[in-house]
Image (cartoon, rainbow, N blue to C red; front, side, top):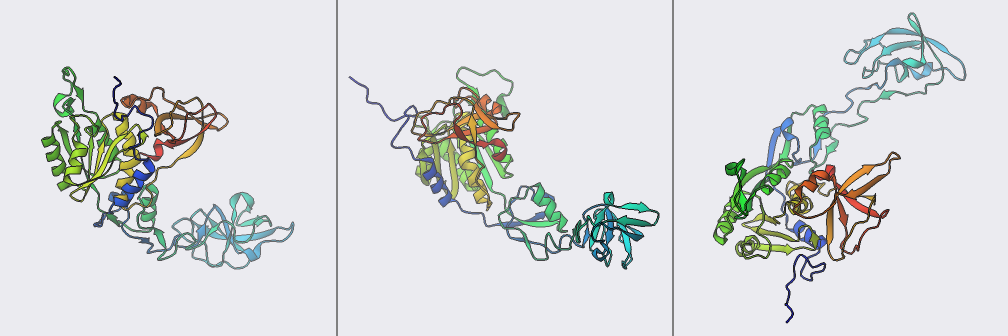
Amino acid sequence: MAIEKQPSCDDPIEPALLPVAIALQRMQAAVSVIEEIETVSLRDSLDRVLAADLKSPVQVPAYTNSAMDGYAINSADLPSGDSEVSLTILGTAWAGRPVDAELKPGEAVRIMTGGMMPTGSDTVVIQEHVQVEGDSITIDSTTSAGRNVRHAGEDINVDDIVLPQGTLINPAELGLIASLGMDQVQVKRKPVVAFFSTGDELRALETHAGKALGPGEIFDSNRHTLFALLSKLNVELVDLGVVADTQEATRAAVIKASQCADLVITSGGVSAGQADFVSKTIEELGELTFWKLAMRPGRPLACGIVNNCRFFGLPGNPVAVMVTFYEFVQPTIKMMMGCIDTESPRFTVTSKEAIRKVPGRIEYQRGVLTTSEHGVVSVATTGKQGAGRLSSMCLANCLIVLPAECDGIKPGDSVQVQPFFGLV
């Protein structure tokens, strides 16, 4: 008698699996942006999200200045054709030390980069294009009028919106804000994220580091991976440790987490086993937005809401934890922060090798991007793609994204990749 088999993660096509694109749409529709605003010091604003459009209180540059080391002149003194002209040097304008003089016809001022342009000047002849003889210079017609000058306000004017609401403040943005003379910034409150691992086989490093493991026991690595991933997003963390594989313990942990956080993340306990209680608990206490997805790794990914708190139940396999975090959790957190840029970059490169794949699910395979001596970027997998091979994530510098309909890749085919430098 033939065994009546149930759908499983071994099936290439499983009718009950939700396509990733639809899951992302549902997830995005359910995200609420944090409304609370904080005023923080400039340095504390790094990796925070602007709560309002940032307008400039000043103009940049603050004054018209030289873009090069050279000589400030009036363009009316530029000779025509092949002729030359001599100009008298009045003095030197340094950055921060302007010359108190007004140029008259036939005069020039030695000027350094950033130096304020003297009254009556509108052009800088670079020092390499002049001949100096005592207190005078000789110039020719190779410099055009207005060259090498940065005009006041040409970059930013007063009340210009220099950074829109929702901008994530990175080093460049922080430096720009500092250049405007601002030492405080309005940003969105940090999301509070609670996380825990589930599994009777797990042993926490807090109590078992360096100790021998018993039969069937493993160290809890997922919670530390989540700590690292979340820390890079600059959120407030609530680590609830390891939770036992019981309905009661899971329920208590979910309730506690949802009462203190904006987002809860678990790892493990979301599959279809007898000891997997996470998705059942979400459904009991709140709303389960989706559960099984047409992706590999990461098929058993639970997403829902409990007590107005967003909830993600990630798989237990270490690689699946990282992949589902990158594809679902990270953009959710950025949306909650009000960030206008939530998508991770993807670009197309050439595959160095054949990649096996069966149609049915989108796959995120670990890859290594390299650049040839001719500047051609290509990718190869890290080898075996088991979801428990966390070491392969250390070897990889990207994810190779293979669409659900893909039936395999041949050497030389084009594939899409998500580089880790754009994800982490």
